[in-house]
Image 1: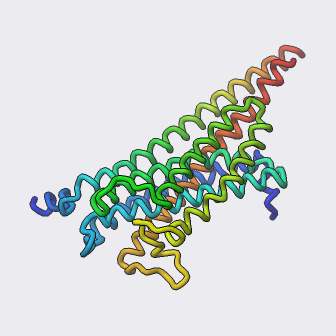
Image 2 (image 1 turned 180 degrees about the vertical axis):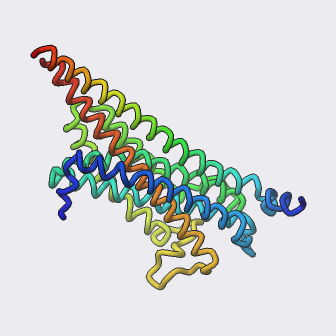
Image 3 (image 1 turned 60 degrees about the vertical axis):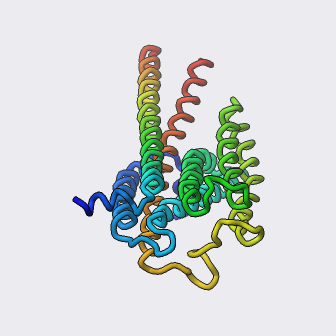
Length: 61
Length: 241
């Protein structure tokens, strides 16, 4: 277990090394999450609009 | 096959949809390998101790901060000059990614600077020009938001992107032109990398991971922007009918 403790201590620089790696993961994951959700939402909106238009076109006939 | 083959938005959407999951998966894999190498395999530096590990996220973030801006500026130029139908969307889609990496370069740099320089921040040329880069990204995104007419917004944003491009060489050469605490380039030098291969390889893997992540994210965001453009067009047609 001492090896693990040493690993987490980062030679006394744990307070700098771990936050640096953590923030990278957080920002990259957040950007991915936001973009993916935005894309999905745009797909849904677009599909609904197209369905509406087809509906109106067939009603007009 | 010319550039215009993929200018067709439908064709682009189909191709992007096929590439995106592979790019996303590859980015995650490379990132896992990079983190493993940087945090576990690479030995602590004899001068900097374990803080040297921060380099493996700081340097690729800073490279991406610059790369995204060059991409944004080139796409803006293509949009202005050749009116390529996807170019302004590519530029718009890349801005938040660039802003994210610039933010990461600043924060990880700060976390490295405190233990090594004794300061979270210094107002030297390198740090200040990267901070300006961050504000350029934010300004670029704000400009898109602030102009209702999509075509006018694209044009104004593209001009801002090109004017701001002057900052890129300033960032790159800031460490040579002015006195600074920041170290000069160690990898992209005329006389070859001045960094030990045991550290160069993990650095390059991490850089590749960031680049593939950029591709996956850019494709997703471009598909979103394309959809949003189609949605706007459909709504306009609805209103006028």
